[in-house]
Length: 157
Image 1 (cartoon, rainbow, N blue to C red):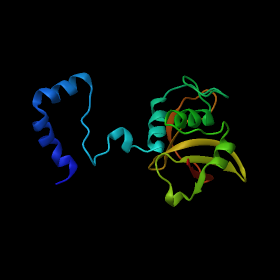
Image 2: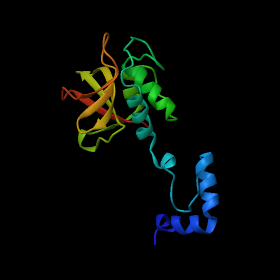
Image 3: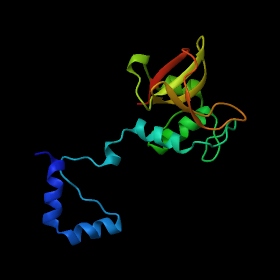
């Protein structure tokens, strides 16, 4: 029997009234051995959700949120909300991450666009070849399919 299997019996022992009271006031029941959804989510997953929540926010060069973003401003804001500090620019963010291969990328990793050794753009990998990013002036934060193979991946530590 797993900890999740024990939840119904714990609720029974706590009493229906107690469970209803907890639900009504937005409480939670702690079950040993079972992580809450909030604590189970990784920093990268949280940052990914923050970025997705900014869908449609206008691009503005130099902006770091909460209503307007440039590319590195979106990643900085998203990871800050998830509890991690990143430098301001895409290149500095690349230098701060643990570099990983495309075969080891995971949702929530940063995707750095480069020309030679020059990093010029960053987004957050969403999985299935897509990223959340703030593309350019006149555009908005959006989910987009990767359009080039000239990318590097970095994992925020």
